Length: 223
Image (tube, rainbow, N blue to C red; front, side, top):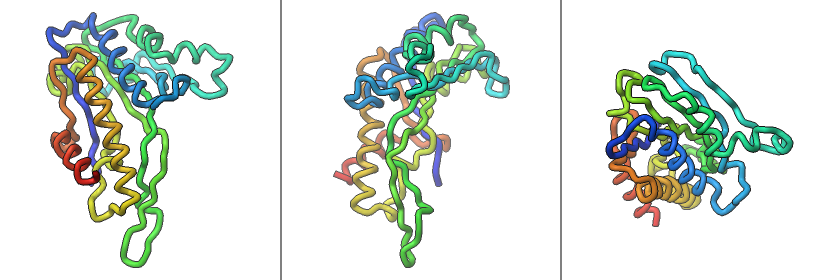
């Protein structure tokens, strides 16, 4: 069964005023992986930013959606969606009980397990598509201090299907797609660990399963 995939990140001696710089650092590492050698790619910019007070049941107090395509060439969105600018605007007012969420995208191979049937076997098609990722920084009092479990910053990758599709559905072509997805995910995780001054991180699913070892084992099998 598909599960929601997260990366939780903690920092040593963390203070609220450090949150904007920490968010910029994580977003930059994501942009490097997302752009994949394309320096002018819109994948390296923020797609949307929101702030949520108190807990997730509340409506956002700030929200901005950026246009990162040809329509933005003469728009303020072009400058506004640059990571440093988007974070500065969204975190202009820092509050202990607020979460600051930034949406970005990267290209992943996505399985379409409903593509068709061949006899008794499932025919799984794969498409390279922009996939949404949400990177959220938590004030220490947001959602009753949930940062202790979720991290000072949490990365929400969406459903884990692109990385852990069951082995019986994998042929040689699918194995190569999954390998590329796993390599991208691990590259981002290791880049954050190396460059962002963190104290710890955890790759996990909503069901509570740590995934780092599982993904590395999957990558070794696919190699």
